Length: 169
Image (tube, rainbow, N blue to C red; front, side, top):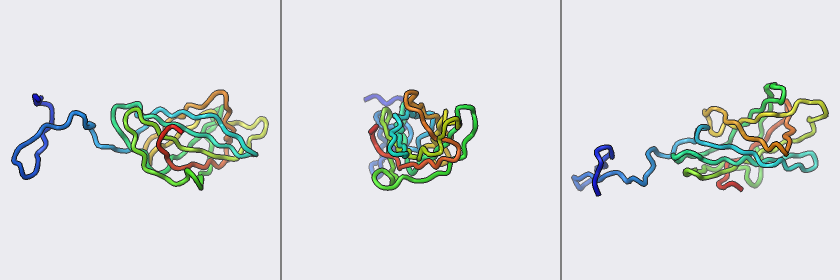
């Protein structure tokens, strides 16, 4: 194998020789996922006796692996542009505990959101845009909402967030 001058050498302890870096290894170690690496798409809203749940699928479209950890944070803006103030909660039970989910390029993960729809009366402004802060300290990423499945989150609705889970479903 020919070592190109741009490949970093790795010193192997005790041998006194250097070996070229593995070209299959990622260029950077797995760090937190950033919004620019991800596509976020919401599934349909599942209504049940006033309680709603929606799964948001996240795909790493970049060439660099990254990691999702802890809980995402949700922010919403209404269809008329009003910035909503939504109390935050945690989903409990299956899917509620956070996991560290590594995302290889092309890899997927998901997070579940839940809320009660009882504040969404006729004529009340509903969410038109949702954002997720995918990791602590990252900038918000826009969630593509399903146009056939209205999201009846309104200003003041508590949005509960589960932990990250590997896979699209």
